Amino acid sequence: MNVIRLSDLVAQGRVAGRRVFIRADLNVPQDDAGNITEDTRIRASVPCIRMALDAGAAVMVTSHLGRPTEGEFKPEDSLAPVAARLTALLGCEVPLVADWVDGVTVAPGQVVLLENCRLNKGEKKNDEALARKMAALCDIFVHDAFGTAHRAEASTYGIAQYAPIACAGPLLAAEIDAITAALARPLRPLVAIVAGSKVSTKLTILKALAAKVDGLIVGGGIANTFLLAAGLPIGKSLAEADLVGEAKAVIDAMKARGAEVPIPVDVVVAKAFKADAVATVKAAADVAADELILDIGPQTAALLADKLKTAGTIVWNGPVGVFEFDAFAHGTETIARAIAASPAFSIAGGGDTLAAIAKYGIEGDIGYISTGGGAFLEVLEGKTLPAFEILSRRAAQQNPG
Image 1 (spheres, rainbow, N blue to C red):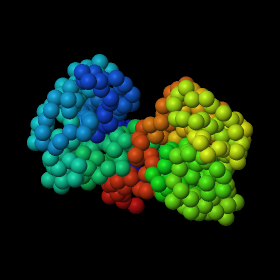
Image 2 (tube, helix red, strand yellow; image 1 turned 135 degrees about the vertical axis):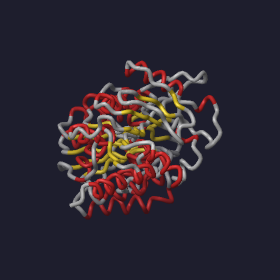
Image 3 (tube, rainbow, N blue to C red; image 1 turned 90 degrees about the vertical axis):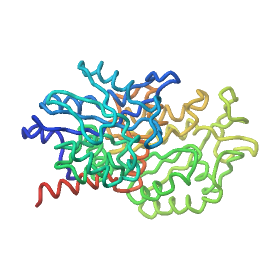
Image 4 (cartoon, helix red, strand yellow; image 1 turned 90 degrees about the horizontal axis):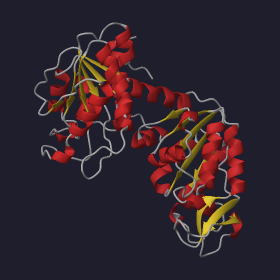
């Protein structure tokens, strides 16, 4: 994908003295008192800010936080805690600027944080007048918020249309590179793991992947629907009986290409969905009417692990069982450790997936951990994200031919 990168502009000496507007993803969780409880997104945004500062730019940074009502400021919507954390991480004062749309004062070598961009009327609808005002604030617009790349809003898309230069920051560029490596130019075999509670929420992803992957591993409630499609009993497990036909279509599409959707041969069941429920391993054909399938069995986990260890590329979205309960976490742990041990390039995304990666301490063994939930899923569906589309289009305009 051809986009201009901030690193390229820095290398070309085109950033010094320029006004640089960075759209970051600083949407961090907070407790009831407004204290930041987890700052991964802030820390991940620092390299882009530091790159612009070190190059001598006058830097403006903004982000959304929570779900504010446009035009109605409430203290809990403020980026003030984020400004304090950035000040600590950057080692320089990061003032918070409110009511910034009509003008910002910032000097080269300085950075300011612009208050929650979703407070601006017209932000979510990508209002043209608002986008043009934002674009007028800068010489270079930098999109570095992959978590918002699937949304065409004023601070993510509109500003990129009208800013003199629009480019990708290091976080967004890394996502582009990882997605290209995993889906556009994968080393084969390409194996995808798609898990979750419902087929309906990931049906388009399953269909899109069925046309390109060599192996499609399904887990969670999705796997139960596929078990039904294979004619196997699932007791009172979560499933979508009305989508059995769709599951069969995915299986058939894979088979027609010489690929497969491995169906579990054994499962872990319980009588109730709770952490202290008694876990029993059973053959997939022997699930009783009053039982819930809460994990894949050890034989299935071992078979899938063998496939992952010989893969060339692995795309992972979702745990294969109720990994929050230790008795039903063995399948997900086996899969996670197999991915970590595989020489394949691996890309993982989605909140539950990241939680599993953290639980088993394998962050350093995953090729790339995507920072965007919804954006990651839309890429798996084969969609072109608005951020990628506009940055690619602006790159073509600025570098014709």
